[in-house]
Length: 233
Length: 219
Image 1 (cartoon, rainbow over the protein chains, first blue to last red):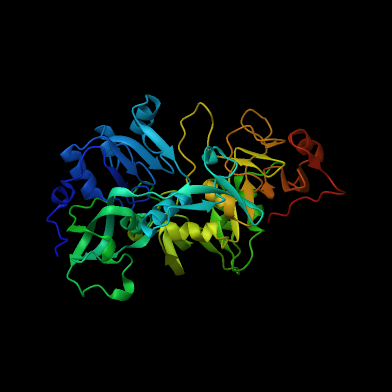
Image 2 (image 1 turned 90 degrees about the vertical axis):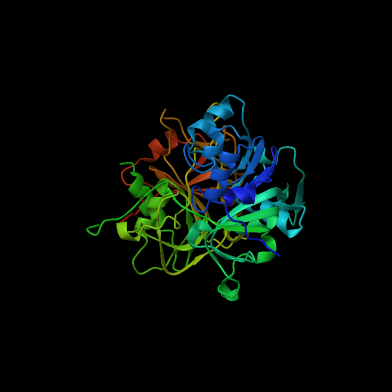
């Protein structure tokens, strides 16, 4: 069994046009930078991207929007991207906005063998239109179907050759659930190590969910809002 | 005189209790963190997967892998924990968060809230707002009493697309502290120097005024 690929280009080679992808990250934190760069180079089009956000104009998923590779986004917040706005208003791009918690749970459910679940989120709003609703113990809920993807592209801090992953800080976000919900999950890591080097007590995503892994390179880890305090304050 | 943003945040901070787990939205709600009493332990939750959020980092501490829901760089306090977005919203949806503070464009007398979409304008998305309003046991809306055009934001019925229904019980504005119950706004406190007449005039929804309404204490 070999899950290790030499680089992003090799790992994503068979992602075909019109695939459904999940891409980890919150804002630009914890995004699969190497896979995005490789997808832009490969020129794959007609993609449906399930990702909490849509990057910024010149980074993250914004790079794939600029090259018009994305047909549809399923996201909770897409605010920081002018090109996105242009394509949305011109009708080139389809967007399905989903409440963030429902998005996370739909992805988790997809990986956990739960076809749909009831949640109070969005009841009485336009998000519930056309969806089944049900009253349970006096409260109204909306039925939300699970999400799955042809490929899940996730980014981890450390991983071993068997696909076990550890995340750092808030770069974990959507990555663990997406790893579960991808038919093929491709993990890029800052540090690829041998089995046994990661303490099993601290594995966040067990290798069973990861089909491919590679050592990422040249992480920029761009910060959207660099906010600091000074010693005087 | 009407409260400024800091004044609204200070009044909301008075609702905090020792040991509370709190989620603060973007804007005025974020300022509440500046007024947590020194003798109180409050855990701030950031829905991108952090409980026990600390202040902004010093320049040399900046970590691209540690941000808040507003995508700003932050720090962790001793006792903090990190988790996935699914875990984060399980905390929220499961009712484990003691207090949520968020902004709004409109609130109505039935506790409905609108804060994510204006027809005709670019829709950026609801982020975690719909999950938060549907789940939190205790939600305080922090907002100005009127919009830029001077129109009331406390309505009989929201006109903008809704974020949640029948979920808001408390509102703190630059003019007043109000509770929503039995299909009406109940005036609890008024901002220092603000008259009941002004609050009446700027509240479109049904306003109940029972007895003497005290001035807020914010310091």
